[in-house]
Amino acid sequence: MKCIKCDKEAVYFRVYSGEAYCVKHFIASIEEKVRSTIRKYRMLDIDDRIAVGVSGGKDSLTLLRILAKIERRFPKAKLYAITIDEGIERYREESIKLASREASKLGVQHIVVSFEELYGLTLDDMIAEAKKRSLKLTPCSICGILRRKALNYTAVKVGANKLATAHNLDDEAQTLIVNILHGDLFRLIRTKPVTDYREGFVRRIKPLREIPEKEIALYAYLEGIEFQSEPCPYRGVSIRSEVRLFLNTLEENHPGIKFTVVRMWDTIRSIMERELPRVELKRCRLCGDPSVSDVCSGCSILIALDVKGSRIWMQD
Amino acid sequence: MKCIKCDKEAVYFRVYSGEAYCVKHFIASIEEKVRSTIRKYRMLDIDDRIAVGVSGGKDSLTLLRILAKIERRFPKAKLYAITIDEGIERYREESIKLASREASKLGVQHIVVSFEELYGLTLDDMIAEAKKRSLKLTPCSICGILRRKALNYTAVKVGANKLATAHNLDDEAQTLIVNILHGDLFRLIRTKPVTDYREGFVRRIKPLREIPEKEIALYAYLEGIEFQSEPCPYRGVSIRSEVRLFLNTLEENHPGIKFTVVRMWDTIRSIMERELPRVELKRCRLCGDPSVSDVCSGCSILIALDVKGSRIWMQD
Image 1 (cartoon, chains in turn orange, purple):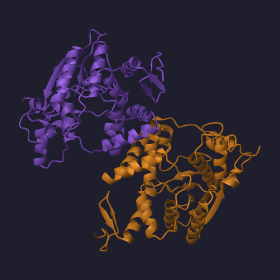
Image 2 (image 1 turned 45 degrees about the horizontal axis):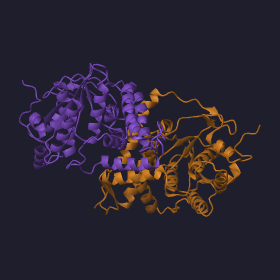
Image 3 (image 1 turned 120 degrees about the horizontal axis):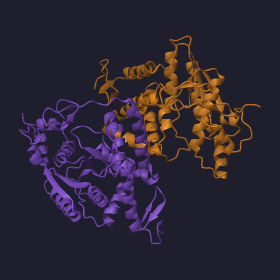
Image 4 (image 1 turned 135 degrees about the vertical axis):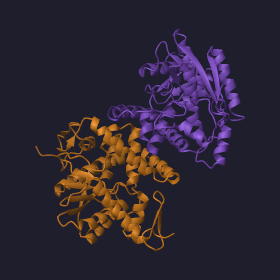
C-alpha cells in the first residue's frame, strides 16, 4: 500500500478514514490533527502560559512534544511541563526521569511536585492509611482527585492560564460511557474539550481528544519518544476497564465508533448546556478552591485520612 | 431466605433492591410494577382500545396476561392481541399457536396478519429477493421496519388508539447504548415510554420498560405461560448482541446499572425535548403513513424488492 500523500510505502492504514500513510506523513497527520483540534475548540491564544500535565507515559510525552513544536511558532506563548509525583514506590521514579529528559530536550521548564510535599503523605501512605481506617476509598479515587488538585495548584503557582492534559479519543469515549452507566449527568456535562472559566481553576484543554490511543502509541514510537509503558501497580478492575474492552471490540468491527460516541456527546452537551442552569460554586473553606460543598472532595479525602496539615490549606 | 411480604420461603432475590419474594408476592410485585409504570407515564385511559403486539415469546405473552388482568377492572377499555406472521417457515407457526391459545384463554380477540397478505411477499421471500438483488438489507432491518408498519396498520384497522409493545428494561437499555454508538440522535430522542401523537400512528406504549428481562422470564414460568423460546433463525451477530452481553456482564457486578442507564436517559431526553424543534412529518405518497421523506422506510424496502402491489398502498 502507498502513502496517500507521496509515493512511499505506507506504514499505517487508518481504517476509519481509509487513508494510508508513510512515516513522515503519518507524523504530519497527527500533528495537523492536534492543530485543528486546538483551532476548532479555540483551545489556545497566542500569548498563553500553558502548563502541560506530564506523567511520563506515551500520551503526555506525545502531547508535550507536539505542543513544543507548535509553541515555536508563537514566541509570546510559554510552556511548562508539570509532573505530579504521587509517591508510588518502584513505579513513579522512572517516569519522572523520562519526563525530565524529554522536557530538557525540548527546552521546556519541568516542575515536579509531590503528594508528600503538598499533602504531607505519599499515595502509598494514603492507601495504607485508608485501609487501616477501613475507608471506602479506592487507590484510583484518591489518586484521581488529589492528582487533579495538585496539577491545578501547581499550574496556578507557575502563573499558567491553560492546563493541557493528554486525554485521548479512547479516554473520552470511555469517560462518556462510564458516566452514562453511573448515571452521572453532572460529570457528563462537565466532560468537555475546554472547561469553563472558574476563578481558582486554570482552564483545562485536551488537544489529543480526537486522536485514538493506538495512533498516539504509533506516533510516540515513530518519533522515538522514550516513555514508561509499565502499568501502575494500583491499576485494578473497574467499570472503565470493562468499557475499554467493550469499545475496543466494537471498534474492530465498526471502525470509527469511538469518534461517533464523542461527537454525538458533543452535540447532546451543547443542546443541554442551554437548558441547564450554571452550577454556582462556593470556595472550599480549607484550600479555597471552587467547590460544590463547604469542603472540596480533595480536602475531604485529606480529612478522612487525618492529615494534620497541608501546604495547600489556607492559613487563618 | 424469607419473603419480605409474608413468612413463606423466598423463590427470588431482587439484587438491585435487596428484596426477597415468595411466588405469590413475586408475581404481585411484577404486576404492581407494570401498573405503576402505566400510571407514572400516563400510558392508559379508562376507555382505551389497546392493541397488544404479541409475538408469542415470553415478553409479549406476559404483557398480554398482565394487561388482561388490569383490563378486567376497566369495563370501558378493550384489548386486542395482534400477531404479525412475517412468514418465517418452521418458526412462526408455533408462536402463532401459542399466542392464539393464550388470547382465547384470556378472552381477548386475536388478530393474525401476515406479511404475505399485506405486502405480497413473506419475509423468507424478501430475504431471498434482497440476496438476489445484492441489496444491503439485513433480515433484521427488513423485518423490524415492516413488522412495526404491519402492527400499526392492523392497530388502526381494529380502531385501537394505543399500541402496547413488550419492550423490557434490557431492550430499552440496549437500544439507548446502541443509538449512542450509532450516533443516532433522532432515534435517541424518539425512544420514549409513550410516543407523541401523530395522525396516522397509533400511540405506542411500553408497560414493561422497567422490568428486567430475567424477571419477566421468571414471571412467565411461575404463571405457567407457555411461550416460544426458540430464537429466530435469522438472528445474527449485531452491535445489539454485543451491547446485550456487555450490559449483562456489568449488571452482574453493578446491580441496577440498566435502571441507571434508562433513568438517566429519561432525564436527558426531557431536557433535550425542550430545545429540539418538533420534526414535521410528511405523508408517504404510497401508503399515507407519516414519514420524514416522500416515501417511508417501509415502502422504500418494498420498492427495492420490486413488490408490484401492496394492500397497504393507497389506491389512486
